[in-house]
Amino acid sequence: MSLEAWVKLNAAPEIGPRRFHRLLRAYGSPEAALAAPAKDWSRVAERLSPERCAESQAQARAFDAARELERCAKAGVRLASFRDPSYPAALLSIYDPPPLLYWRGDILPADRQAVALVGTRQPTEYGKRQAAALAQGLASRGVTVVSGLARGIDTCSHQAALEAEGRTLAVLGTGLGMVYPAENTALARRIAQGGGAVVSQYHLDAQPERFRFPLRNATISGLSLGVVVVEGEEDSGSLITADHALEQGREVFAIPGAVDSPMSAGPLRLIQQGGAKLVRTVEDILVELANPRPAAPAAPEAEEPAAMPPRTDLKGDEAALHALLRESGRAGFEALAARSGLAAGPLAATLTLLELKGAARQLPGKQFEAL
Image (tube, rainbow, N blue to C red; front, top):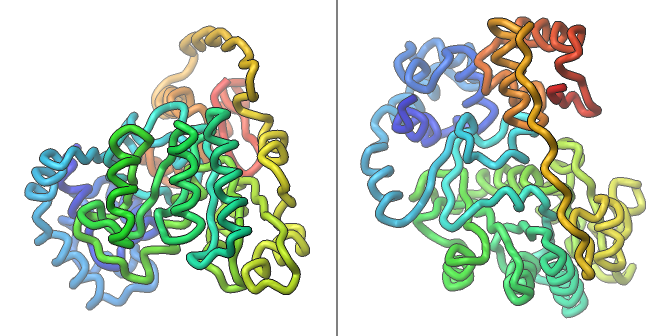
């Protein structure tokens, strides 16, 4: 697999995760997609004219991926496609996960136990206190705090997690070649140097354009077991993150506030409509998420489960798909389609055969796991 081809296709204008995965399913690899006739992209890329497809493909082909990889190596930035074992497992369970991730710092297996804290860029003092208290409480119990490094609630959450000597993941809406807002450059450096990782799904020089942030929000929720909306107006971007979380089968929580405060309008609407569980303390979140690591005194770590013995009765696509499920733990249909290279029809048939043979089972939310 050529990582350069992944970098080029990922940098193609107007080819976000959904279109990237459609191209990958159609052509089998980024190399083949880049080599395909541009006129064929409009058939695959969904609501993109032939002219725009040709322009997007031309810019992707011209993107200097070799220089991008050199810059990453010099800056200590890691890259992984969603087919790479180092890619965060939580993201593999969502529809159309980011095809490529860049990060500075460390993403650890422990980061599977993560909760996102999101909210307005102009919080009240009450909102700041609540964000800090939740972030400190989660981090002190071994839960990774995920947020977007924006002003306001995001900044409070990252800082509080670091003060509790916990872990935090900052997901940018820009490339790692710049930090937005610039005032959080020192905070990003502190996170990457030992408190977690700064993450982006965009090439290094990607600018803070409006279309990037909703996609970034889907990554924030995808990395998390649940999302907490601390404060935000009714049209707040944090509600977009909550919507993504609901679509991805994540838990959604909201902090109640004063009914006459504009910054409480978003969380109160989520609670009123039944889309979010009301949160008063960190324990409300941990109970709902089965308390991934209880507060002190710490319980002794459970023994590792025995390795699943290989299935000798599976051949071909069945064996390959079963091995993929064993590696992933659990994964959604779209993620399996993208990682296995199987078209939807053959994939569904193979999953059915695995279920009939007792080698896999389907879970709620169209998730699958190996048996």
